[in-house]
Image (tube, rainbow, N blue to C red; front, top):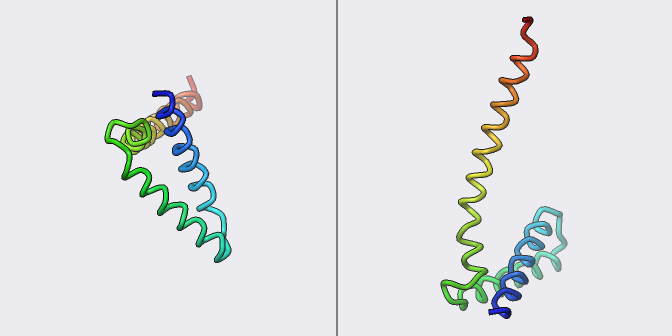
Amino acid sequence: MNRLIVLGAAVFGAVIAFRSLSTAPRSSLGSALSRRMLRHMEQMMASLPENSPPKLVMSVLPGLREQNEQIIAMLREQNALLREHLQRPH
């Protein structure tokens, strides 16, 4: 079980590192290396059992992202209403 947790953490870290690298401009060598790492990670993820921690984390992330976007939208709306209320003369 500990091995799965360590493997899951390593894969999760690799995903975060890959995403941070993918936003920066890359040379052709860096681009080739990134593609190779992505292919390897996809193969590794495909070989894992369905209930493995990395696959569970990856399956939950889209829902969390959507939920976070909804929360941020609600907070922005709440802030706008609060600013409007505070600017009104009493």
